[in-house]
Amino acid sequence: MEGLRLIKRGAESVIYEGYFLGIHAIFKKRVSKSYRDPKLDKEINEQRTMYEARTIYSVLKAGINAPAVLFVDLANFTIVMEFVEGAVVREYIDGRKFDEKGLRELGEKIGHVAGKLHKAGIAHGDLTTNNLILKDNGELFVIDFGLSKRTNDVEDFATDVHVLLRSLESVHPEAKDPLFEGFISGYSIEIPNYKEVIDTVREIRMRGRYVEERRSKASDK
Image (cartoon, rainbow, N blue to C red):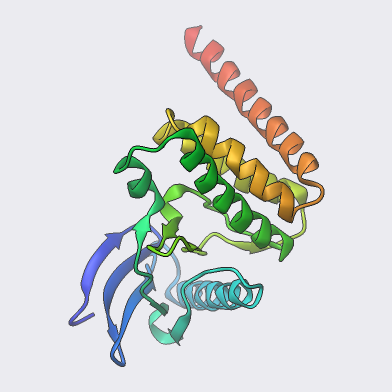
């Protein structure tokens, strides 16, 4: 793509920054897989591109902050979205010193966003501080819906929360407790049955520990 600046290259997509009709924009292009039949690859990437664009539309319709879709180029598996000015939450946390109150307030904002997504029947699929952007005015935006799905399954919502908690533990261990406490506070306002979701998160984590213990025992033999 000419005139665009490469931002990120991943296994599933490549992200560029540039301008679309004079608007500062992000271009997300899905990657073709050489091991797939070309016809099947085209069909899969077209479907996933359209699905993601429609999910973003649903997110915006539900009143949740997300980048507006400016254009969908199915032939090139590309979604053009508005560029959201702000700080990626992971970098925002790493680059500043917070007291517990500030971390709880940030966690509460994340909880509200996650709760609104789940209330709209959408599981993000990769809910980490890398996929949240905080604007200067305090608004929180959620990005990257490449792994999202439409669902009303508590397990899917709990998996979102589990992914977030794992990311806090690995990337922000010192800030994890107040962030997650704030998250629960915000999430519980949006989701009346939040306790069922959190209980399922505990079950998912216990299953993960059981698998890890089995692997550890097997490797010791």
